[in-house]
Image (cartoon, rainbow, N blue to C red; front, side, top):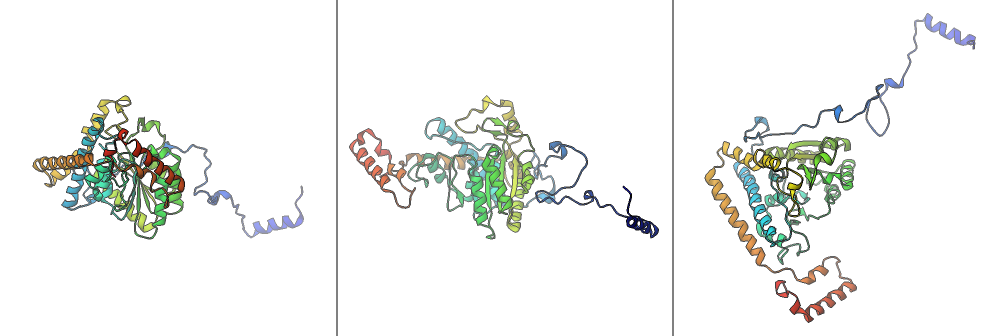
Length: 422
């Protein structure tokens, strides 16, 4: 088609005046889609774990208990360091006695904490009792640090009349209102969205929520909801993942294909730290940094503590069915967080063999004393199972309770009523 006379004149004038047209391409402008921040590319390539380096693991102590980089030393005072070590070793003594008591049929269930002591104590030491804890079920070290007593622990495991939960929970399902430790529940991952909601309520109050969970729990849908809500609602919560290698009997390499759990944080828009979970000082520094950021920015942080579950998942599990003795021995000997921290204390003249012997004897004596006292106490009265669900007990429950009371009175010789409080 022939150009009009006017158009030809326009082109002629442009060239005569040495003007040029600039072709404006969308490629020269960044994408403006509302759902992501990105750049254009003309190469069609997959993005995957091969596209970037895995998250590094932060470490302060080497395996011989030496500070690797002096600038990373938190310089905690000797009293704090001693308490950290004593709580870690007390946890070991407690685990041994209660595990054996379950095997003897004296309590119904138990879960040990071997191999994860540094993750408990290092994180707890970086917080205050004003901060709220949502535990999964393997965080008893956090309670010990906060001052939960041995009698309180034993009463809960026995479910006796002194148990604050009134015997309604399985053993190791601890809770303490005074210590801001929300009672543990059995269903997996329920604590994660609850923690996000609690943190939302605490915005601007100079407090954080810390939520503990295992890498297996991160496979539940509740984990996605919790992380996404916390990120989009700017909640001051620390999601603390204990990646101990196994979700009961399922090894980590069968649970996910990505870069651990920490690799998910940036995908949700959450700042993330990956730390050596067997190094109490590294865990302390990471948790302290996470708390400072969560409070200052009112945003969540994800911490992935890389550790190893040395013990069986619980007294209902036999881990020899899915992992070798050599593997467990390696982690319990060469990667033991308690031994590592002890070497650090000894390197700094804060601990020795004599103190070790004296402390372990004292710890065992205290645990056994609390254990024996809890075992003697009666069980809660049977009527407790009807209470505390409603503010005012409905008529149908009142009738059921009265009916049971008559039944127990009539046939009390057939029931061990002497074992229950009145």
